[in-house]
Length: 194
Image (cartoon, helix red, strand yellow):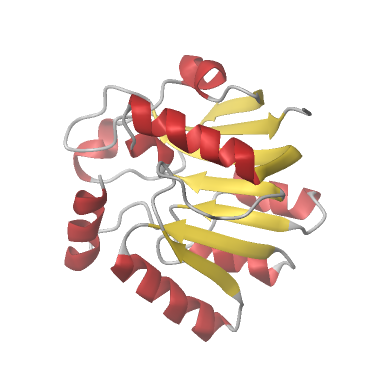
């Protein structure tokens, strides 16, 4: 999937980049005391900067060099310090541990089953007990090319070691092109205590 994202960043076609953070992220960041956050597939750093401006210590990970270059520039312009790592969350990246908030706005739903399983294992190792995971994913069956998707009914089985707190249809998130017919969802999960 990284090649597709590299091409889309080169073309300037990044429909997953929203000007404003999704409502769920705003609610979580406002409700939790600032701590450490991991932005998975951070792209140009919009959500990382949003959290950093509110007192969070943020690490962003992405596997697309151009996206990280833009994230560095965005962080500088915003005057926010964000640790940025080039890496594939489905590999074994060294992102650290003890994160109290993990944010996935459209990365994990692009992974195949094996990659998703590895990514969830890596996230579980990086998360503190009781951590919150916010993930945006379209349901399977969306037009291709596009993300593989994660069906809402599959979330509890995919995210083993996490408790599903809520799932909601996210129709306010505008999908473009062929993905306009996709079914977007936002899931909130909490890392179970060990």
